[in-house]
Length: 480
Ligand SMILES: [Zn+2]
View 1 (cartoon, rainbow, N blue to C red):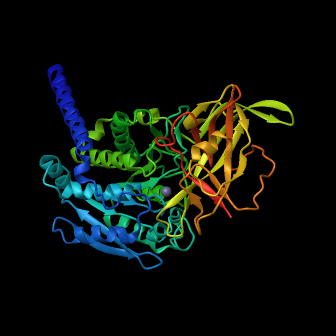
View 2: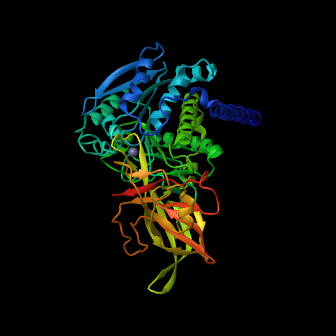
View 3: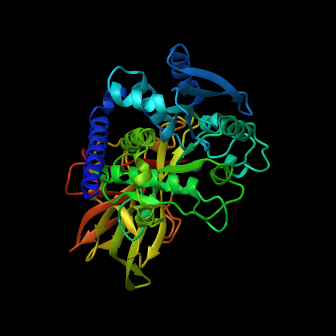
């Protein structure tokens, strides 16, 4: 008996090792399968149609039109595999959450390619995969969460007013899927609880009742999540969060879990210096494919569900820039402040490009908060910006070194921002009383020992002792 047990342990270890090996190979070879035609977040229905059509023409896949959005955009289901276990993966129920849509097309490229034959045979003989990418194409068109009706599809699982929601329910029911992957993006300001690490990926084995009971279906989702968490730890250590499992009776994930599917929520969050979330997309690809493999092999079943609770909770304590311990003078007295600054994305009319507009999110004692970028400004004092008039801007750094942030100059027509760390203003512009408070645009200077050392322009920190090239200076704004 003892011998048998040790043999089993060895077999299990070999198995686990083989899977780790697969994961690392998936990570290394990712670029071979990456669908490069969709490399930015603001993708639209038209961008994925050539990929849908290419897949439809490929005999390995079955592509069916399964519905239409309110504005008449096709919803397609892409299926592959001959196994008994049905896996349903849908993405972008919220129009501005495209990361997993991109990863789905990477996975489809992978499944079509000749490599990894053994692993793919394992997956496709045991599983039947069904992908529904971009469930909310009308929202994607204008890069917004809600659909054309202005509702959150993820609160429509009971009332089923949206054709997108009805399609999702109908497909779930017709497949009676064993596993569901509910693929979203979350705010980049989520962190793993009590750490400065962004929650690059967050998981949830969604609850099916207010009591948050754990039945076999939910336990299976937890086990697969523990497996995926271990994988992400190799590439983004500490950057996984556990999404709140509060039951939401109107949401799809919660109802799909109730209707009898092991429901895995994946939320793509933030990652340092990855504004287009392409590294996060890659982590989706690697962890979803690895999850499919462990489901096909059945190896997830041995994972203890206790490990699920060990994944840190999601928290929302991140800023883009945190300035600590800065001295701020008000009415003749000095105060010590921390500043938490956001770089909000503002879409241009085409919803294909965006610029940044900064704001102070909070100020005061922010010692329990974190920043993607943190600057300890102990001994530095906030200095209000100056306005200057110039015919042409020839050297932005010279202006900054003189404490100038607002420039009266010829303003390019229509544009609302400028690729310079300066604010362009009209002839009559006057600086209002300068004060730091939540909501204002963070544009000021920092002084230490009588010298201006840094500028903060539209929420971006600029080191005045370094060339502008090579610094992330974001953009300035134009005030007409
Ligand atoms: Zn979402």
